[in-house]
Length: 579
Image 1 (cartoon, rainbow, N blue to C red):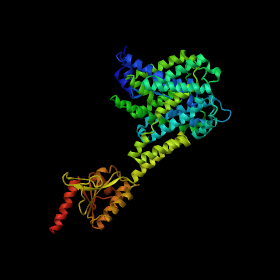
Image 2: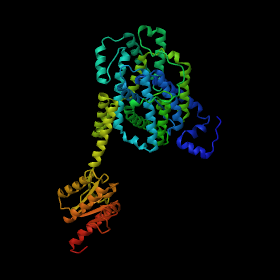
Image 3: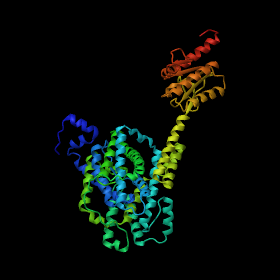
Image 4: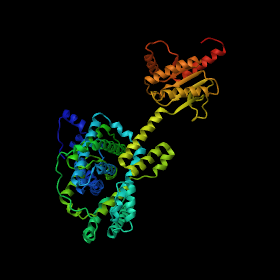
């Protein structure tokens, strides 16, 4: 393959915005066969899943293909991951449905719903790009593992319950899981038997494929078998719902309508979509990058996801994210370069142009089965046991997220989970872990008394470590803890030594508190000493006093020197010698 020559200066500037451009321009034929096979494997999974997710989000099946083709090509140029596959995603589709359904009123048509979705997608892309511009890639770390576990499990339950009507061939009503379950059980005694038998057969086929061909394109095979059976037996004539005609045409690239009356709902929802889709995509991208020995840039991922969402909006698609299952297919098939995404997008485009007629016979029950099994892959309920063993607070956040997503909705559940996580962070910062330290003579250093039985406290010496920055909302707690430890000590405390290595930052309130504490202790005949980052802390304290006079605080470079000074004082007193 002929390489395109670009001046180095221009290439460097372009690569800042499009990390994939140099790799695509310098692509050689060596990995071509491997990437082509991986691209076709990805397309085989993307095709039925994209159609199914479009149905899940309330769109025509072709919109799922529109949301896949151009975004994949754009991400290949802008993404910092060489393997991440973007496209329709369970969590984003559930959030789209939860956002747009309340905006629909009697008389609204599918075109208006689609216009709202495209506008939401454009806003999501804009928020991602703005976040990248302000280097907010660290936001991906705010969505903890426990929140993601609860979110994905909750979304999986919503998807499974929402597809029961399609699988049984009955009309399930309700806007939340509880109402849908009530509606389902009210009608479950009278299913549409041809639909139910088809669903049972396809589910059995899916299980067999998962058992004996785990890496095969199970969703595609189920879809092909369903189309063949539907066409051969005329299932539509038996009352089995099929997806109907799919237009065999490219999407028209046009600017979204952006109805201003809905901006009040669309803008905050787009911000939430950007946050969730970016966090999920980044987690997937990091996992596969680590596996293959390279790094990703979170800020460039924001740009890439933003550009991909804008591309989806311009091609009349809906919001997308990184797809972990399709990325896993790419990795398992040996795909290592960005050309996999190009090949996959071109393969789906070819199907859109020449093979849409057979898809018209695809039963909606088959899409329901594909979505149910895709949702099952999202679930991991065993991790709750591990979370409970590792951290009760993390377990509670994961469980609260799951229940909130299922019972009150995806958007509200995510908001509640993030608030819980922030409250937990604030509580840990306001009331951090702290330790009394004791000396292990054989090691010549101090260790936590509660973790090291051999550590012994020096009589009259309180060694204290505070595992947090010393700032306004934990300064009083710090002072109270030191005072309490002095009062409850078995022997009278003569020195309090603060291990400053764990105090990474200190603000005005913290500095003033230390100054007040030093005076209070000095009045009681207790020496306050600092080790580690003592000079920085003292600089702050002097700044608050406005002079450079000495303060009633002793400074030591390390804990050993503080211990030696304390022992010298004791020895001097025993000999009745002045220091």
